[in-house]
Every structure is written in structure tokens, then in C-alpha cells.
Picture 1: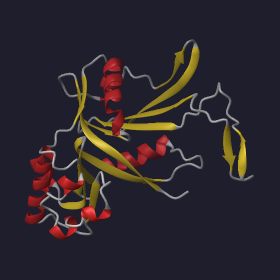
Picture 2: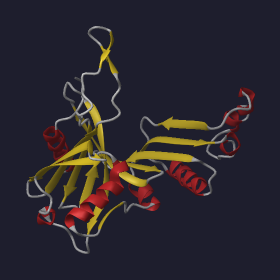
Picture 3: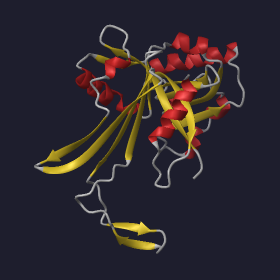
Picture 4: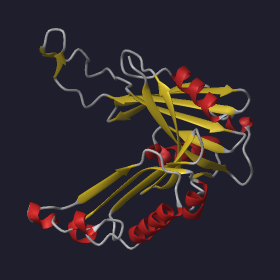
Length: 269
């Protein structure tokens, strides 16, 4: 299969009041399997694998799945028809993967799915018996001071708000209502081929930040690069650094954790 770009969000990890070390994660078992039940019936299964690399990186791999949903039929691509689902109701496909890399040297955490930030905070806190906080420490001034180029700007708003955005010329906003009255939201995406963030564009981006604060823009995403490896993104979650690796999935569409962590540790060193 062709390689896929897999992106990791980067944040600062705080455990207690002091810097953490490799030994701070000793309470996490090297591998375990956990099941959740409802009314005495198993409904989900999760496994965890932990590995320490180079006495610096803590690699945590989560794989989980649930008994439902389970459709009665599946489509057989060889026979080109629907067939009975071969998976039994008492069987679980662990088809959700989460990869977490913790760097002791930089005190940072790399998460493949940042939507699980709160869940990960709670789990780490309970397991380590410590106060755990995963946070972004980048502010807007730092975003613009450190980012070297802008990749993409995306914004959206209702038609009446969109027409007020100073970044757009009047020729883009004068005929919105000629399309009808049922327009709920309008979006604009700008992709830059090569832009080293000149002063004029930096001023425009700051203006967009201000308009987002004033609710003149409903959604705003600005992404740029601050070195050859890392991307910095401003969106609803705040300002987040990201790093991307190219990895080939297995035939079943899932990823080998060993390969993920090997590529990721190489990229962030």
C-alpha cells in the first residue's frame, strides 16, 4: 500500500510540580488488556503497550474496539455482493489506534489524536497518581514571531459577517445574495505555494485573529512552518505544533506501532 501522512499534535506535558524522568512512568505496566462490561456483558476491549527507547522516549500504544456497531451484512468485494457479517456478536475488532510519544528531554508529548487529550490526561493522572496537564504554551505573538512561512488560511462565516472581513475584496462579496437566500455559511481557503510571511501578510493574520475574537469569523485555521520539520496551526483548539511522518499501513489498513515510533523518534530528535 502507498504511504500515508500521519500527523501528531505536540504539547507540553506537566506531571506534578517537577520535571518528569523515564522512571516517572514506571507505574505504567509494559502491556495490559482491559475490558469494559455493561450488565455483565463485555462491550469493549483495549490493550496498551509501553516501550522505552534510548532512555529518552516513552512510547504508548493503545488499540481498542467495541462489540457494536456490528452490521448484519458486509460487502464482499470478490463476490461483489452483500454477505453475512462473519464477525460474531461476542467478538471485538480492535480497529482504533492511538499513538503517544513522550519525550523526557524536551518534556513534550506527541499525540496522534488530540481529541483524546482530556482522556489521556485523566488516565495518566490516575495511573501515575499525579496531577497531569497537557497544555499548549504558544501565544499569538510567538506564533507570528517564530513561524517562517504560511501554508494555508481557512476562514468561514455567515454571509453578512463574511462580507465585512477586511481581508476580502469587494468583488468577492458583492454578489453573495445572487445565489439565493438559503446560504448559511461561506468559507474561503487560501493555499500559499511559497510565502515567507512578509510584514503585510503578518498584519492581515493579526487582523483575522482580532476578528475571530470579536466573533466576526466563525471558524479560522492558519497553518505555517517554523522549521523544516514542524508545522504550527492556529484553530479552535488554540495554537498547536504538529509533526508529520510518512508511513505505510498494513494490508488491513492499520499501522505497525514499531514503525510509527521508529519514524517519529527519528523525526523529532
